Image (cartoon, rainbow, N blue to C red; front, side, top):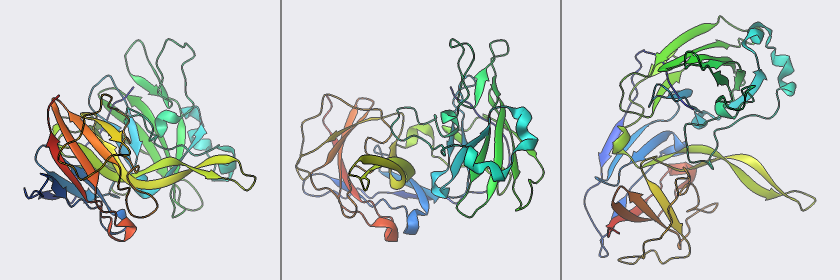
Amino acid sequence: MRTKLLLASVLALTVQQTVLAQTDALGYTQANMTMGNGYQNRSFFNFSDGNIVSQPAATWDVAFYRVSPFTTGTRINDAKNIEVYTAAISLTEWDNININNESSWGAPLYNPDQITDWSQGAFEQGPITAPNPNIPSTGWGVYNTVNHHVQGEAIFVLKYPSGAYIKFAIEDAFSGYTFKYSKWNGTAWGPTETKTLANGTDDAFFNYFSFDSGAKVPNMEPSKSAWDLMFTRYFTDYPYVDEQGNPQTMKYRMSGVIQSPNISVAKVKPETQEVATGALPTSFSKNITTVGHSWKPTSGIYTDVVYYIKKGSDYYRMYFTSNGGTQTGNMYFKYKKSRQR
């Protein structure tokens, strides 16, 4: 399930750029996409007009899904490298959360990257389930069949690389979210702040909240129909081999692409990139990281990977031409409208 909450005013700096319609000999336009030095921005791209919108990535902490009164969902800002822990499974434990018990909180929770519904973030990976398997639950709360609200039960602690901690719980969700939080001051929890963030009328998938300002951060997305790819930070299960030769995975923060729910993507490898046309695949994926980071090794790019994008009745062909890494954040690619099926 999913939903959303609140009101406030904090300006988010937005940079908008329309790609000039300069095409190469094969009809491709190059998009000079960049996230900036240190991947400091989150950037959106629209195939229909080549428009790029970039915003500072670290201006918010939690995003709340706001598309429908009856659906709920959240995302943690991976640009801030936050770890989410389940500290308790009852809101009655709010005053008993102790930082000294961190080792008992279990493994941290993250926004999944291998998923088709990007609203199901870190909090939705929590332990809360309904006692009746026929009643929906969200990982942090349980659906109330009488008033149709989702009633929160879990208490989470957000841990930041700086050593800061924030205690957080969603108390109720319907057409918005009521939640509370408290900041650790080094010796004790500070005052509990309670906020209600209404879904509102923004033409966006999420509303965004900052613990720094204690308010909604506006204008953090283009309109829902005005972007196809989001260049951002996210965590993935990165494979490695341990000292005993056993395959393992660890959570690793990547920079790459999350796709809009409005499109589906097919990855083809191997395929020659620089051709006028290609054969449209028969199968397309809604996995949010179908593009992801699969176009780049540790440095540089793969020169035999092509992506086909299905957007309504339109198809686009794209491939990457540059990977600037953390120094520039450049992720240049070429694209062109392909034939309709």
